[in-house]
Length: 327
Ligand code: NAP
Image (cartoon, rainbow, N blue to C red; front, side, top):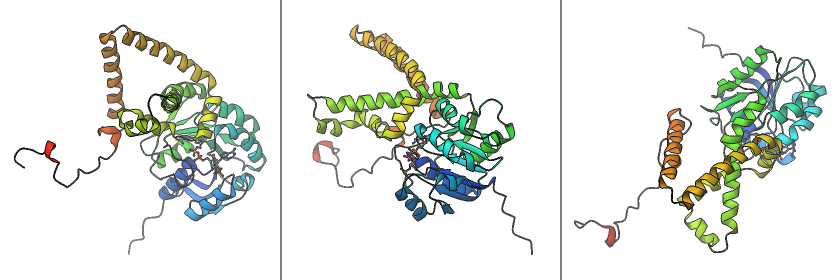
């Protein structure tokens, strides 16, 4: 009788997860599903989250402190708001295993490198990462194993990082379904300022503006939200702590992009004021092509209405004014 095929060895014997919210719990679920870790040890700041990690079975072991979590770990992933990464690096530094890979998932990379790197000992490999995938939900219940599939994970190793460590972390993310790209931290921050941080700021602004209008009631805003507002509200529902930290940490790049945005909105304002239909048409045609490009490279669905399933039509016969003459 032939032996069953041997299970492939895990990429890392022991993976430590510090912070188990949307991103940390998705890593835990995906790593487990893919056999990427021999064992997973997890911790979170609050006792309530640690209890929930255990209830959901997200880790083989749940420990109370960051120091205990990293003890003997080959890979440590810090998945907490970017403003909290520096103090956590300082706290775990004396407890790290020689040769371990230390990483994070923060949405800003320059500040994370500046805040974490000085605390880490020379005998570990620091490979910061940003999986460009998420939802507007938070906490350990919000994660799912497929979150990273066909999404990009950007690694930003500081100069001189061991290429073998970078490749090993890249292999981990590929196993979780992500495509991997390597970038300099500051370049990452500029790219993400335009593709993620500015859109979030615009959504937070628009939803706030609508909320403060006196002549249009709140109930009208909610009732007629399908006209475009609804899609901004999803983005503007994102975690306030995470996004406060992103704007504080990526100040320069966001201000640079905001300057350009203000110039462009002035041009469109002028076109509307002057009745310059050609300028508006040309601009909207250009932006429509960008949307097409995103769908073509598989970063969104081509389904209408932003991929939402449409509710079924009612089974009852249509009321008189809409029914065909034959009915
Ligand atoms: P989340 O669901 O809110 O989870 C945050 C985790 O960090 C929780 O375990 C929380 O612990 C812990 N935490 C919060 N403040 C802390 C502090 N001061 N010190 C130590 N731990 C703290 O957040 P998330 O969406 O997973 O985001 C985590 C990181 O991923 C952020 O850096 C964010 O920039 C990045 N990221 C997010 C997305 C996204 O779409 N959400 C996408 C890509 C990258 P308790 O539960 O015990 O409070």
